[in-house]
Image 1: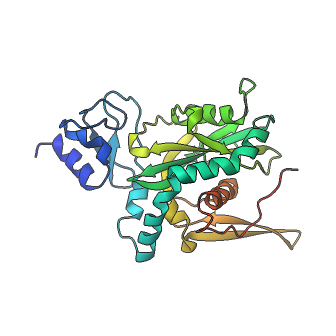
Image 2: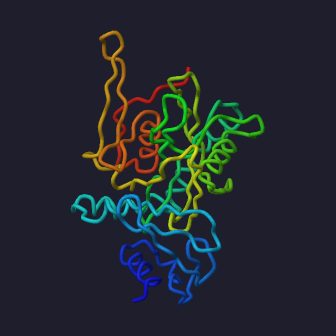
Image 3: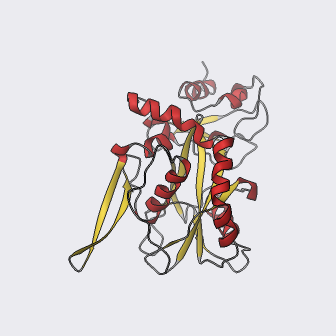
Length: 293
């Protein structure tokens, strides 16, 4: 096998080329990661020691295939296998319509309010399995949240029509990802931050991550990764942080463990609420999220 074909074959064996991208070796079939049918894929050594595909020549961005997501499923336990199988339905059309219906009232309400900030809660699938996509904020940023795990998002701009426009614009600026309003399922309950701002989580579905090209802004984003919903739903990956005020118990926040990075703070609260929305029969929230003042 020549040097150009070997990485492609390794990528297919590793499960990084989905069935819809069967044209990876120029055999025709379907579009490869958003490129032309039959376009080639190049694999390079990834950050976690695996193979990371770059987009075809037709897409100038770099694709992040959630390498760590795939590694989590490399040696699954029986419980993890069952959870992964049942999680496939969370991105089904039926569940999407259910979630859209539950979010209809809050979406209508909060689109009319000039909230200070918004984040895009980015649902996606990797190898057919549902996941959430996260970013790691650049350690060169100023402020207390540099280097934290987060969803793409930021403060409202005066030109933003509503919180959905804010979330989509910030996602484009951070990840180079252009999403239409049709990708948005709805606006979840806004949450207060420790700095007096109110943040609106906007739930959206990116589709298969293998077919998405990202161009992260290195000034804002240090890493991009996913965590499977099956991993987030397992009790052994849940933790809790108890906070005290003047020596007395005050409140408890969720933490999600055993992934590429620890998910905590506001991002963990939003993840907690998202799991409850997506999988009410499989996930029970154990903490009470803070309410805007």
